[in-house]
Length: 482
Image (cartoon, rainbow, N blue to C red; front, side, top):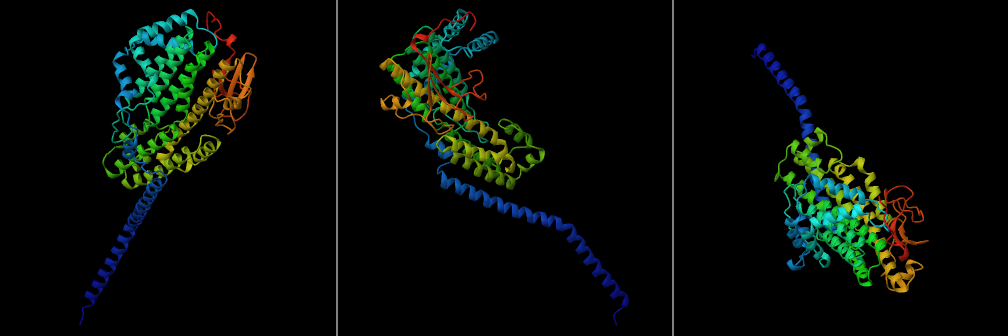
């Protein structure tokens, strides 16, 4: 017979084991749920990344950083303006604090001058001293006038963010020097020489070539604006020859055709995917502090501690990478559109999705907005400059201003009437008492009769354009204090 006490003991043991099992399951359940959710998240992230890569491959083949670098233009050494610019670097004298103060004062005094008025004696003296000090470098820099192609050696850092671009500041310095030279030559009534320096300054920017980095293209935009401003001043101070005008117009047309926004968007997509892939696969390992340091370079908002911790998980990085790739592929496709209202509307719709985007996309969105807006402004300034130079050529030949921009096309001075990127209409032309205004309605989309605010070009109620003066109204005396 079975001992009743043994049966009771066995029952208690079974109940205890069942109880322990239940307790263990209760304790493990959250872990199992979390593990299941993580597996589901990992699978979802893998599928999202696969789809994002496939989309990029389909819409824009050879989009990866290594492929883009392999596809860049090869410039023969004898035609490579980058080589010439690098050779100028040792000739640029370092500025001490005193020189820096003088340069700052000079730039402030030259800002927003009346274009048709000459410099005063103090400005001429300061400008001449600046150019004399850099005479050797300037002589070399002016040889860029017939060198419109360039390419610098690039060594991409593993994290892309840390890629060194020492040539970018060098290009800026040389373009600034050439802009000073153009201003001095215009002051001395050497209009052809001034336009030659404007071409050299444009070519300094063009030496950056098809470099697929946003900051590079932004610097190029800045150099374009500086060169166009000096073309304005040259045409307000003198009357260049037909040959000089034709050469600057041809270079402006060549530069206007460059797809800077598309180049920058493709490069940024490739670079940041390169970074996130290296982070995801463990090729680079970054602590939270490292990530915060790197992201601070480009972020307008700082990531939270939770967001930084998430970026240290391979699965989370994969998800962020997929979102970044999808978003940047969309910006690339928008950048392929002709610059104009449709491109602008689609970019604005993309911007409106910011609140629904993950961390990495939110970090990049402000930079994309700025680059897109800068490219539109730059494009319309170049188009106005091209039309203005064509109008000046017409005036020289016909001894009067054209009736409209269509006249310039019909008579062969323009290949086509430039379109205003802000409303998809032809640029406007307005005859003034003492000259001509060729203009765009500007970002506000309203025609303000060519009113230009040079101190605040983005002010409401102002257009963007290029002002030309009648020959008799150019080169007016400067005041004691411009």
